Image (tube, rainbow, N blue to C red; front, side, top):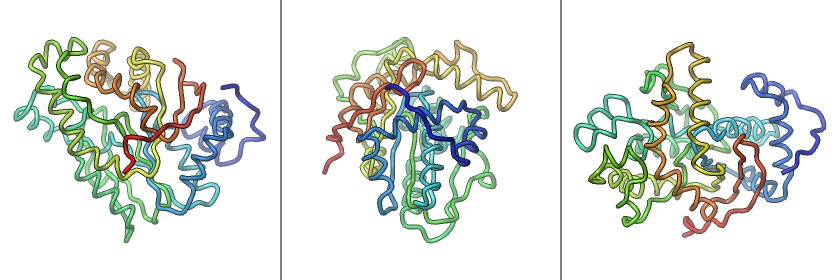
Length: 304
């Protein structure tokens, strides 16, 4: 998609750029995207009478968190009201809970990320309390470098009734696979560490049982679509480097990132094929994460 001129960066946009350490070109590109008719229609839907729940899907490192934060600022800047942003990453089970799950079900569940390693009951109750706001709502946070949930004293708090809630995450909105598709391993991690297929079956069952009811609550689903799984490792490695620089702490090595991403590979590949049929708005990315095309999704899967 060709970029168009931006008629002056507004104060809230300048503040956003500074806070997130982004170049001004980010605002130029995203506002050019939002000038598209299909995107305009999507923006109108999430700005309508709420509270509305917007899901943002995208592979690791695709820019979901940045887009969600920008949308929140944009929503509030035009006086649509308060916007609450949740990352599904912040609802990971604690390290102790995942260690117990690894002992009881499968060793690979010690690693955070896949369906089955989130506290979906906590996510659902948090979304319900935001939708039916009666008072301050605590939002959990997860420390990825510590690989554990932060203490409750460090949770964020939503103090006003939100007119928009954004839930972003790599698996937001994705469907389970057919059982027949689970038979063949998709990488060395599955071939060696899940040779019997128990881990991927547990993940798939968890997705269908615990996550689909949450996806069914989404009023709108947007998808950031990577050009292919091959770029995800590089994107996730860049993300890890930025995370380490922010905290001046040790990070995963490239080899550790490559293994980590293999936990996500199966469902990421599957969702890149299925998401254009599920989302309301599709934002197509190039390897540099620039949005090259905007299309209207078909939203077939979640229609009731």
